[in-house]
Length: 349
Image (cartoon, rainbow, N blue to C red):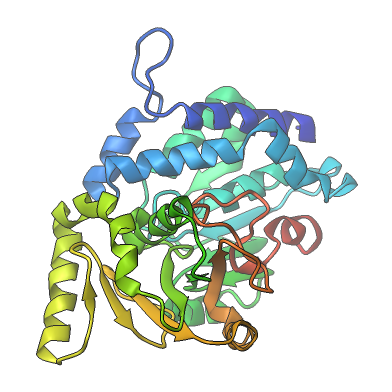
């Protein structure tokens, strides 16, 4: 299967994902409609809106122009993909819908075999997409496998987990070529000059997926003197999240802890803002910290780079950044943890 064939398969799959949940031309349900219902039933955090957003965002990232832009940097390495086909074991996370899709796509587009061990929190959607891909290109049916058992002699491993599982993965998979990832967080730097649309985008970066994604903004840095409550109107459109039972329980629990401990907080009605040094925050909590000098702040952030997945800013803070509203719409070349997965698959196994 040459690279043009592989690319075309994912372009067609991208069109299907982008069209969710629209029925097909003959009126039958979308090919992923039933899987989306089962995924939501299995994991209450996977709401219909979150699943739809995830599928549409992935589909949009797989346009012909974006796939070609992603792959252009790898040159002839991709042309030779498949001539030395290996089996890559992939352990996926289940914090947001289809967190493991990029690894799935990378393994297949590089010409290797995919063997997935899926999180129990997200074990429905990726196999359903694999069925769609198998219908587009039956040659891939023999290259895709899912298992709930230990991998049997994989040639390489890609695994994503928490800080605790990261240590286990490093020990257990150390004898294989591997990429091991752990929890990271998104952060945002505000200058105080953001437009209303930019602040709406920031709110989506915080609230999408209930803040459970590794790219979700869990902490914001704001200039000294900034009125933190001025942000509240931009979070009001996300008020429906408080009606989600699991999110509401987290919100009430976190608020109760602060009240009992007499810890100051700002209550937006659907989100608590806490002045806190740590990057990671609990569900329903957004940490914030004041700064006075941008250069000093950037230096501080650079010292925590191993904990940061992305930096959101409306203007250049003097380090790599993405614009507000784009944190949950990564491009194919926005590699998790900054590790070039495709280079690993093409050159290191």
